Length: 386
Figure 1: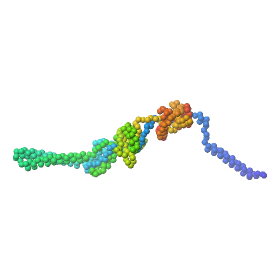
Figure 2: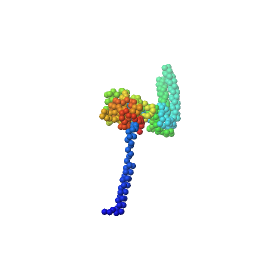
Figure 3: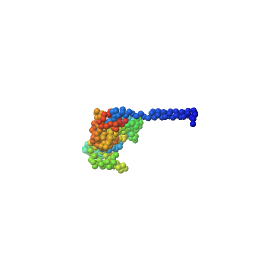
Figure 4: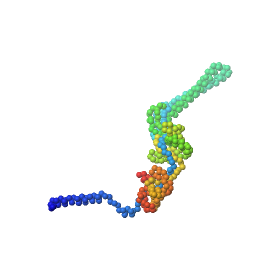
C-alpha cells in the first residue's frame, strides 16, 4: 500500500513533536535535579565541628518553691489631728529615712494652743503659791490658837485644789505639745515612700484613711509554703539548724545566691492546704527584691556537690558503651569513654572520663573519627541559647 504525501507529512510532524517532548523532558530533568557534590572534594577536606567547654556545676539536690516578696516593716501614715495640709516635704517614690518630716498640718493653731496652756499653767502655779502661803500662815496661827480649825481646813482645801489645778494645767500643756508634734508627720521607719494621697490645702483628720505608705526594702522577707511532709523531713534530717544554700530566681531570670540572713517558720499548719509558711530574710541593698513580687526559691545544703556536665548532643554510643569526642588545643579529636550519671535539664552528668578542661564536639560528631584534624569553633552558653 502506497503512503501518500499527506500521510508522510503527518508522520513526520508526530515524530518531530515526540522528539521535542523527549528533549524538553531531559532539559527539565537536568535543571530540576540537584547537582551531586564532588565526592572526591568532600572526602579530601577537613571537617568543621562545633565544640563546647564542659562545665563543673554544683548538683547538690535542691527543692524549688514559688515565693512572695514582702516587706518586713510597712507603715500607712495617718493624721492624729485635724487641720489643713500646709506642706508635703518628700518626693514620691523616694527613699525616706526614719525621722524625716513628710507632712506639716496647720501648725499655727496648735502652737497657739500650746502658748495658751503655758499661760494657764503659769496662772495655776501663781495661785498655788498664794494658797500655799495662806495655808502655812493659817497653820502657824492655829498652833498659837489665833485661827479656828474651820479656817485652817478651808485654807488647806484651797491649797490642795491649787496643787491639783497646777497638775491639770501641766497635763493640758503636755497634750497641747503632743498635738503640736502631730502637726509634723515624720517617717517612723526607713524605706521607700509611695504616692502622696493628699496634697497641700486638703483638710485631714483622724478618720482620713492614709496620707502615704512607706515600705522597708532592706532587709526584706521572702515567704513560701512547704508541705508538712517536707517540713518533717527537714526536721528529722537536722536541716532546720544547718546552714543552707539558697537561690532566688527573679522574674527576669537573674539568680541571687545565698544572701540569706535568717529564717523561721510559722507556728501552725494551714489545714486547708496541709502546708506551713516559711519566712526567709535577705539583704536587699541593690533593691532587686520588690515587695509584692513573686520569685522562685531553691533550697539545698550549703556543702557543694560538684560534677561535670556535658550537653546531651555531645554523647554517642557504640557496642563498647558511651563516649564523647573531644578536641585538644591542636584541633585533633580524641575519643573518650565516659560513665554517665543523672540528666539535669538538657545536660548529662559525667561521673568518669572527662576533666574540667575538656572541650567536646556538640555538632558534626558523625563526620569525625579518633585522632582526626578538624576545624573547631567554640560555642558559648550565650551563643547556644540563641
